[in-house]
Length: 180
Image (cartoon, rainbow, N blue to C red):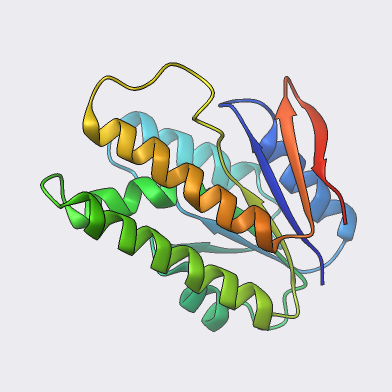
């Protein structure tokens, strides 16, 4: 089975490419959405994304514990899209709470990504994983934002080590970073 990590900035074309790759594969798809509707704008965004997906795709809305939830819900699918790791890590921050120690948050993020990697290893499906590259700009001004940036970077590195291919998307153009 093949696994691909798509990374880049916001609105760089990652989700679009993920859906195009899954559509070209022409097989049953499980779309794993990690976004949660915390406000009206996000609810509207989620609804637009739901409507844009092909009707025959299965959707799994999961804010954490992806590996276990994918294992339980992926029977018969040939491709799993995870969109996205960026929001998954944000969800972990929210679940643990603002006052949690950095070590506790890092432990939870690491466990989440390790669980996902184990799921991928055991699965017979192809995986297309969407994430953001947030460490290219200025250093965030507060400790929580710096921790988030650092832990998303760590999660991306863990995933990149275990996938077959990595692409950086810039203005809708995919630049190969790691080829199978």
